[in-house]
Image (cartoon, rainbow, N blue to C red; front, top):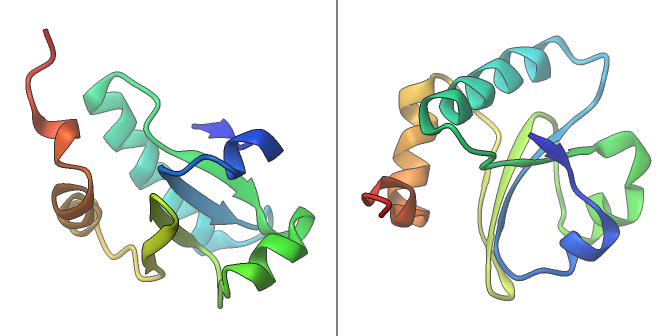
Length: 105
């Protein structure tokens, strides 16, 4: 995972993991996302410390952390708050990012 920059926030498509440093559930969620990246051998998710971005949190109406914000184009397609399992996260990736599952040449 890599920390999202101000310029990248303006991009149209991304998967953004939003956390706070002292949140135990956030650490569990991070581990799930890191395992997904390990399997794919690429950086898939950006990350953002919610404490440092109050304007973003308000603009996108992020209600709690951890949160996986899925943005495509000018729309937020999904805000996932219940990570539950790696399989659950994969269900969102299959739905919104099928390109992750096509063979790369």
